[in-house]
Image (spheres, rainbow, N blue to C red):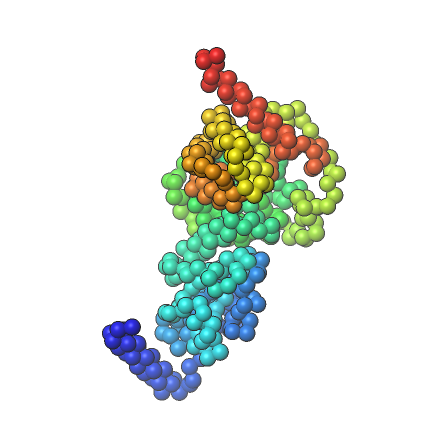
Length: 437
């Protein structure tokens, strides 16, 4: 460390000592040990509880490392309290916390987390294991509209890579999905549907999904601006805008359509206003329709329209094949690798689907052609997830078979879906290659 850096440390130390002394002389009171109290909805962390509360937890944490003597921290405290109050409905997924680095017992803790300035804000992901999992927040910490949306973006990334079973699905509805496709999928105990029209990254939609994840009175989905539902209700807007539609489950006409520039908090307030008209649903009641319900012998109604070729079945089967079946082998080489290359090439040419799906297969084909000797399951899975991220998650996060849904939950599904995929590919191949026969 050169002499100028040492000089900087000396000057800063003198200024800090001077500030504390002045505060004690003018106020005739000791500097407070903390800026937050029990009614501020902020979890107070210290060296004795930090690891237990933050690590290996099935939620995420947004933590302020502050010093109670720090003028910037004192000035920021009210903003942080407002943030915690705004995110009260998020507490089952996001917890707001703080550490006072001026407390001598926390010096080593703050050193471990490389806190060099106050206040420092860090995001700790789902199931964080150590200090390295803390991501420093570098956005505008005073923007009470922007910070929650940035946190929602962090939460979404956690969902993409870890898929916590306790969390809602943040999957964007496919561009061809219509309102009549969504309404039948809503649990019977749920009364309202919220459709958020927002292009990816859909931070407003993710924020509302987090806020109402445990409220069974409303079901929230996200669509993009080019979805037929948006066009149906005249939502044109800019690609950066977000709009909210609220509908009763049994009606196709919206009860409410938000203004173009409403914030996520205004949308949350409006959702709260509408769900207040319905009684709170007990968790045990809502589980009657849960996908994890042990009794799987419930009959699924069958209609002849189920036997039409459904694009959702093709995409769901494609997802299962790419992320579950192919990487079952830890190492793919030799004849298996050559066969996989041929299969990926065939899918690139003949699988019908949306532009993002076709781009995914095109990029996968380009990548695998450069693999010469062997391919591990980890490499394969990582590549799929990378392309998924680049294209906005075109593959669904969970199974959602339609025509391939059996009369019982354990019937049909993937075998039917893969048959449908191959059938669709053969039809597509004939259409493309018929003039060459």
